[in-house]
Amino acid sequence: MSNPEETIDIQTPENVAFGYQVAGIGSRFLASLLDTLIIIFLEFLVIVVTLLSLRAFGQLSGTLASWAYAVLGIVGFLFFWGYYIFFEMLWNGQSPGKRWVGLRVIRTDGTPITLSESFIRNLTRLVDLLPAAYGIGIITMFIDKQSRRLGDLAAGTLVVHDRAPISIQSIAVRRGTNLRMHGLKKISLEDFPIEKVTDDELNLIEDFLLRRDQLTHHETLANQILATLHTRLGLPLPAINRIEAEDFLLAILQATQKRQADDYWRTHDNQRSGQ
Image 1 (cartoon, one colour):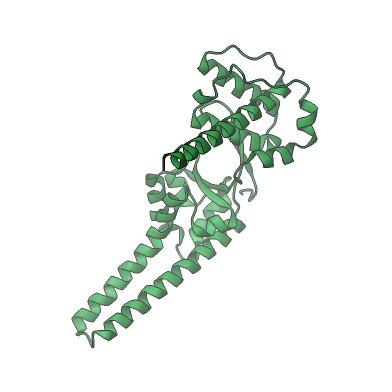
Image 2 (tube, helix red, strand yellow):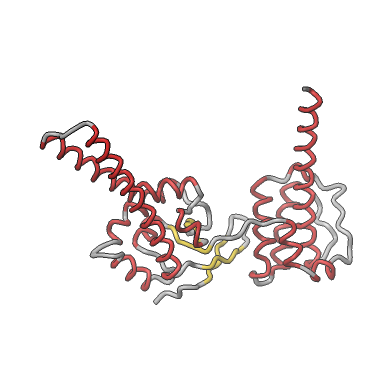
């Protein structure tokens, strides 16, 4: 039987493992309930608007009325099926219900869900609903150790608790005294090419800094990320210990954000002076 709050480690292409807390049946049910209420409301709204519009044009013949009800049925199906696909693509794996509860759909390798996975998992939702009220889906989630329903198994996805967005302020608060204790050696980035750090590498650094308290051997992982970054840039490894490697990554993130802010305000000032 699956553990509703199981934590799994997913290996990134950089060979760094990040822990994700798998969403249990309770949190997924709440998200699904909210989404269902939204869908019912939208369908009710469409039906009311359609009936009022038909009434405004007078009484329809039997054939036209049948066609109208058939179209309403199709619209209802599209709402139920397309609703999830639309929002999962718009919000990167989140529907309004999942967004409110704090859940997200990801691929089993930890990467964002794509249109094909969203299409498969939501098409299979019709099977998960059988015989009623997600009967098959709930049974499957109880059996699967990662609480996945048939749609997730078919698409290669899983639902996890979402991570809060990271900021330098939140990192400083989380680290507290640890940052001061580790700041025995000032981190200098004078010869470090900040502008050559890619967005993917920055995302990896951000993700690590946010989750380091949840990771085992996070000092070693920090050193590994730093070594991979220096190797790609063709730089010699800095003479720092494993603990200082975390502060080095934080310094890179801070310097990058400061550079982006400076570039923004420089562009803004140039635009104002050109007016």
